[in-house]
Amino acid sequence: MYYDAATRRVYALNGSGRASQALPLERPRREGLADGLPPFHPYTVTVPGACAAWCDLVERFGLLPLSRVLAPAIRLSEEGFPVAPVTAYFWARGVERQLRHAPNGEELTIEGRAPRPGEVFRNPGLALTLRMVAEGGKEAFYRGPIAAAIAAVVQQAGGCLTVEDLAAHESEWVEPIGVTYRGLWIWECPPNGQGLVALLALNILEGFGRARPAKRGAFARAHRGAAPGLCGRPLVCGRPANQPRPVGSPAL
Image (tube, rainbow, N blue to C red; front, side, top):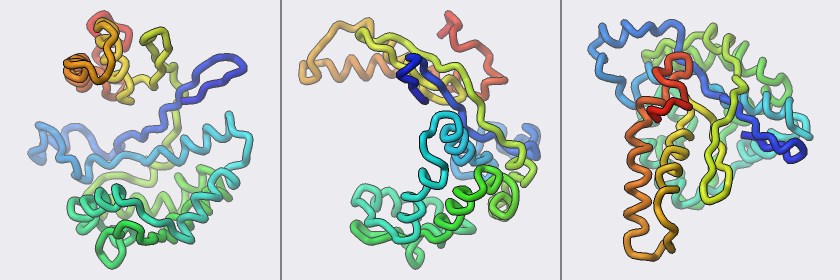
């Protein structure tokens, strides 16, 4: 999301990546996955779209060149940074659930474990990748050795992502969606992003009277207001081209 103060206009960029073209819907069904994919299954890996989104945002709205924008991240990756306690806790969970058995898990661990609170973590591989992007733009990420390495690791894990999938990736400028809440405009990216859920919840909460947070029942009302929005998420937050209903449908 980007707000242009001069024109008072909100811009939305969908930087999410698509699933591999080499993964037809029939394939998971043939493999006994008709009811859905496990959270960490290699088929869930989509094209990483963040890098293209950075580049596209900087190109359209940035005041600094991409190399300057990425310089702090490159420095932190090379020199390291002290890991915060909360980050260390969730990092350790990730090691047990994912990284310990991942093909390249050693790149995100210290001798096979998560960094401890306050311990400095360095990531020279990420620094090299970011430096290549800083010098070559998004083409350096989606075509060439970086793309080949990404596809190889995913395929080694049993996934389908190919270099062709990465080369075909493009960000998409989309129309933002918004609602008014207590006199303020709240903007989100449309589906497949999940910001619509927050807007649905705010529309419901708008119907409740104002209450101080500490007042008895205020939190319960907020929870009840958000719940229907969360329940509607599977119906409306999928791939835009396959949406059964438009975002503005009265059914929402």
